Amino acid sequence: MTNGPDPLTGKTVIVTGASSGIGREVATMLAQRGAAVVLAARRRERIDALVESILEAGGRAIAVPTDVTRITDVQALVQRAIEEFGRLDVLVNNAGLARLGRLEQQDVHDWSAMIDVNVRGLLHGLAAALPVFRRQGRGHVVTTVSTSGIKISPTMAVYAATKNAARTIMEGLRAESTDGVIRTTEISPGFVRTELADGMEPSAREQIQAGMREFGLDPVAVARAVCFAIEQPDGVEIGALTIRPAVQD
Ligand code: NDP
Image (spheres, rainbow, N blue to C red):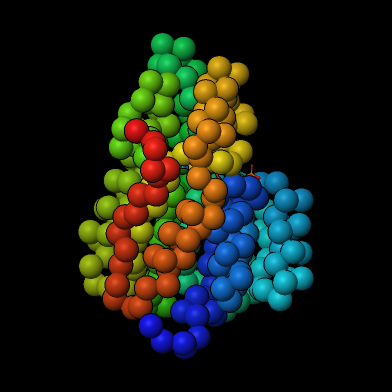
C-alpha cells in the first residue's frame, strides 16, 4: 500500500440516478475522493442540492437534469460533462425502476416503464459514451444490475428480466472490448435501503420495504464497491461484484 494520490482524483464520472439511494451515495463518495461528478436524474431540485453540498465540501460537481429514456437527454448529458471537465472517464449507469407484480396482473404499462429505464436507458448511455471513450482511447462503464436477476422471485419476473438484459448487454460490451480501451463492471446489489420501493403498488411496497428495514444494506456498501471497481489501475477490470446483506437468501 502506497500513500500516493487517490486514484479517483481527477477522474470525471457521470452517475445516473444520482437524486437518491445508491446513485446519490456513489456520487457523494466519488466526489469526496476527488472525482469530478456529473449528476443525472429527473428531479432537478434533488441533484442541484447535492451539487451544492459537494461544492461546499470542496468537491467538484455539476447537475444535468436527464431522463435516461430520451436519447437526446443522454447525449446532452455526455456533451455537458466534456464541456465542463474536458473528458469523461466513467459512466455509472445506475438509474433504475422497479415496479413489481405477478405476471398475471398484466401491468403492461409498468413492464414498459421498466424496460424503458432499465434497458433502453442503459443502451442510451452506451450510445452516447462509447464514441467518446473510443476517441479518448479509454473509458469505463459501470452498470447497477441486481441479485433479483440471479434468484428469480415471484413478482420480480419483468424487473429481473430487465436486469438480466442489462447483464447480457454488459457482457456483450466486455466481449467487444478486449482491446483494452473500454472496461466494464456490473454491480449486483441485494436489498439496499433506498427509495426504490416507493412507487410500487401497496402490497409489493410493504413487502420490499419490510425487507429493506429488516436487513437492507446502507447504500454506502454499494458505493464502496463502485469506487473499488473505478480505482483499479489501467488494465485491471473488475467484471462483476455482488453485494448482499449476509442474511439474504
Ligand atoms: P432509488 O429509487 O432510490 O433511485 C433510483 C434513481 O433512478 C433515482 O435517482 C431516480 O431519479 C432515477 N431514475 C428513475 N427513472 C429515471 C429516468 N427515467 N431518468 C433518469 N433517472 C431516473 O433506488 P436505488 O438507489 O435502489 O436504485 C438504483 C439502482 O440500483 C437501480 O438500477 C436499481 O434497480 C438498482 N438496485 C437496487 C436495489 C435495492 O435494493 N435498492 C437492489 C438491486 C439493484 P429521478 O426520479 O429523480 O429521475
